[in-house]
Amino acid sequence: MNTVFADASAWVASGNPKEERHQEARETRSTLVEEGTTLLTTNLVLAEVHALVSRAGGSWAGLELLDTVYSDPQYAVLHVDRALEIAATDRWLRVFQDQAFSLCDAVSFEVMRREGIREAFTLDHHFAVAGFTMLPAPRRAKHRR
Image (tube, rainbow, N blue to C red; front, side, top):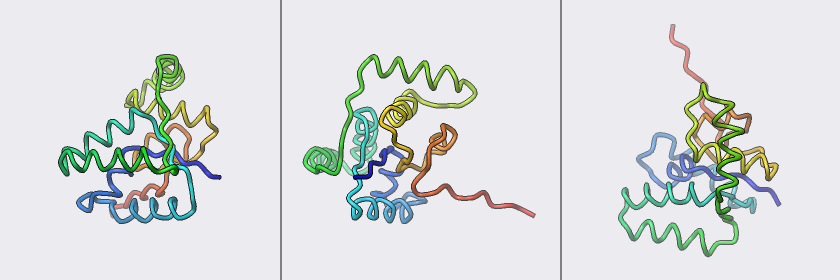
């Protein structure tokens, strides 16, 4: 079974029609779900998504998200401990000090590295900077003449 890391950026975009890349994210998420792909995330990312969904749609929307994640076996949530945070800090934040990686990003990258996951459901270009494949693929910059 294939596993893809689920990041907050694409997760939120797939559920919010007001997001610029909503359609791409929605189609990618549908494809992943139809293929039976496990969507692995961390409790840090889930907390981020919950906060964003609750702000946009109310507390009931946030609860609906949590109920879905906790009841659907296609979602897996890895709980972050101090050792993982320290490893992420050392491997990603210290090494990539020229990048604006958040601790949540760094923990996500470290989880992906440890689990051997190469693809992330994300719109955050930091995943590509860290060497992972983004789903949906990043948009190419438009050249101005």
